[in-house]
Image (cartoon, helix red, strand yellow):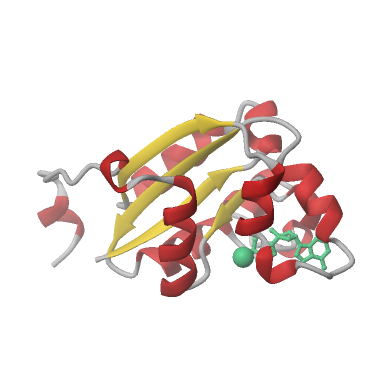
Length: 149
Ligand code: DAT
Ligand code: MG
């Protein structure tokens, strides 16, 4: 079972889309195991986005993610990283497929509403940045046998 970090970014909180974004992940069949409402500091943003240091959009990206609170979550599921990313849609919301979060609610790359880890290493690293291990809840879900073989 994979775990992945999801952020509802400041635009998602400010636009009142937290519930709709969570609903889409829930109804896909992913399981929520951690959640907090928080302000991202510049220090945390720098760690989270360290792969993008030096890129032309980096400063704007840090300004954006620290501009207003976010909802940070850990979701779990079989192929959970990929399932979250396909539910989110393409990074550039202008070309994200309809039916995805970005394709339905966003229009550009710099206000793309959500973050989802892009692989197992980044997921482990990012979950560790945002959550202590005792903030993640291991719980049995009765619906699991109707969601997975
Ligand atoms: P993703 O968020 O889909 O994993 P990413 O990790 O490549 O995408 O980039 C992180 C964020 O940085 C992305 O959500 C939006 C921003 N970003 C990426 N490429 C960009 C670009 N070319 N111009 C402006 N912002 C960009
Ligand atoms: Mg990424």
